Length: 196
Image (cartoon, rainbow, N blue to C red; front, side, top):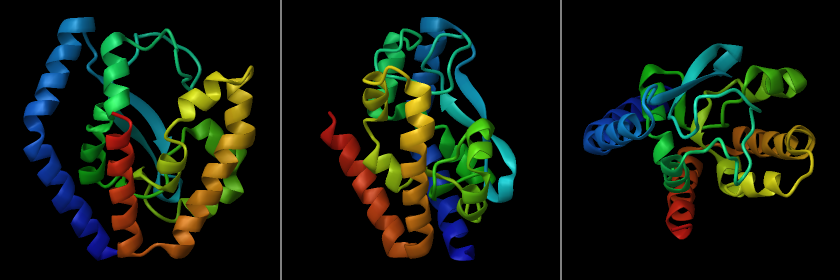
């Protein structure tokens, strides 16, 4: 959809321009608080299975660990908790949108290992660009808390949460319109405000 792509470019460029003081302030706070790197890069699978690196502000200590995060994870820094709660850690993804890796609205991009678990379903989901937000972002905004209550968070994610996210992604693809995208953006903003 050419119109959607034009809107993505215009809005992501505007957000990056208007929020550049916040982006610089967060980057500086991270650098002063825990050094470099300031950005976290992780390989994700995008449109038509093309891989790309998603960008976020780093919220965890530089260390290896599980690909899913639970509430209370001791790898998350003090500043990282604030960035996650306010979703400020997601701001660099507007650069991914500007580059064409992502859209403002679309199924959230997943890491390759989980895409391979559901490759057939992702054959449908990845006919559209992944997004910064989607129906699953709204429904599972407390995902880390859900996982923290499980004795096997990785299994819980792979067997229950991810299939539910794919259901929502397929629903989005069946029903997507400009109005649906606007509605998802509105409900995402409302959900962020309500948690503070």
